[in-house]
Image 1 (cartoon, rainbow, N blue to C red):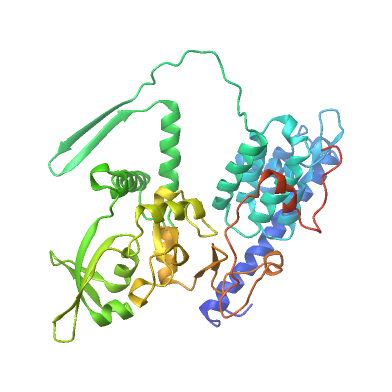
Image 2 (image 1 turned 180 degrees about the vertical axis):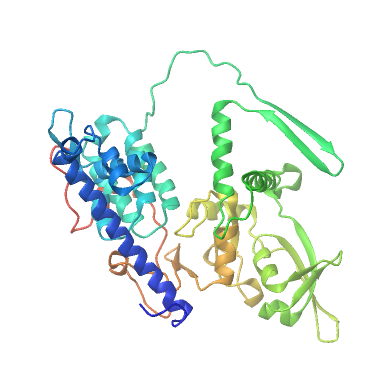
Length: 434
């Protein structure tokens, strides 16, 4: 590896992806070794009272919590010994194989393992589970852990449609209280939530408070920012009946060159300036009315709002994309914006073939990074930047290759009758006894 600074940023990003692949391969080898030691009785032989977690804690010098997670992953991926000393088959053999190739990481494993733990025993021993697990392993090989959430929800509904059995207890009103008080120009919030809604709120705050850069905020500030996002979401124009589903509207004055080239800035009616690059993103899903000026300041055109997705078109986009269409995201439709693939300033139409749903983060990324998107056969496909490391598994599915990455569509779980088609030709079959 060349010294840091001797390579270009693109070369170092490629190197970073390759190093993570090697790291994951090493992690899989460690987990396999832990499973082998457990099967060979090492935790008993060396005085760890039969606990592979205690063995890992001592040998690896890690905390007991992390040691338990390592032992649990090893058992799920590579098998273990039963209480009577009989060998137990691994629960996630396809995930283990993909992990060993360096194509997924421990977060992927934990999400798939948690999903398996929520299923009834008869599902895990049936014929559908090995196919479903292999399908999730394929998706995990090409996406981040978060994108597994949507396929897991869909598979859960198909593998266990009845869910947990109901109980006969009479429902009681949950304890929910909230006090909202104004203090000077700020507001103070206090309250109490029942367990179910408290868990939901905690989960939503965790998702919305995630950052992709160095985290400089205190936990309370992260939660407050996420709560402000929830308020903004609930107050969005399409959720307010008095607005008839119309987006917010801003009148902007800008030069013809700024609108066409995305340079310079526009000025709102109250004098606020907005960079043209940001305005092009906002204009995808807001009622921007541009007043275009010529070189001498004369009004060349007074625009209209037909460039935003009307409610009927947005419903079609939701039915097609089912949330953020980016392959690394699972944000629901309510947290998305309608994006023009070819911007309306450059002649792009407000039609289903030129639009898709993106969350705020990926909407900004599409406008400002080397990600590319197109609609092919009525579905959005994405091409990542070339510095995104392609594994051997994803490379074999490449459609086209250029300076940037290969186009690929977001993953969708097939129908029940087609679930068996998820299995690759070279994938192992169901383990014995499954």
